[in-house]
Amino acid sequence: MAAAYAGPFKGTGVTGNPVDVRFVNDEVALLRTHGGILAPGETEIAPELAVRSTWIVVKRDGEWKLAGYQNSPRGAGATLRW
Image 1 (cartoon, helix red, strand yellow):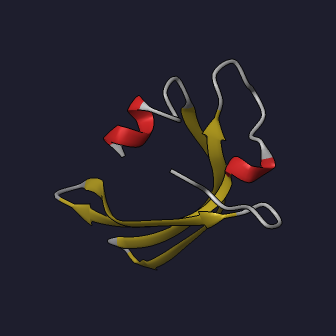
Image 2 (cartoon, rainbow, N blue to C red):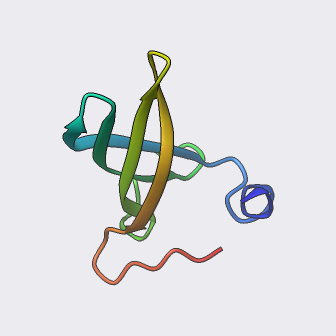
Image 3 (cartoon, rainbow, N blue to C red):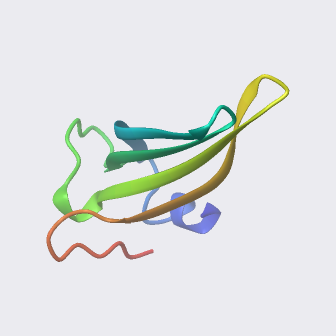
């Protein structure tokens, strides 16, 4: 990822919004978000940079921690290229 953000994605940001939260139990939750990469100066995600993501979070010692993450292109025919 360092090479991508030092090169073609330099100056970009990442944003996302939750679309679903499901608790497996009191200490495990699955989240789905829609988001993507924002080009410098942009406020809307370009379709080719839009993703849907899945997050697995676990509660340890009273704090939520990220246990797993995956994303896939969201736009029609979208392909993320690094």
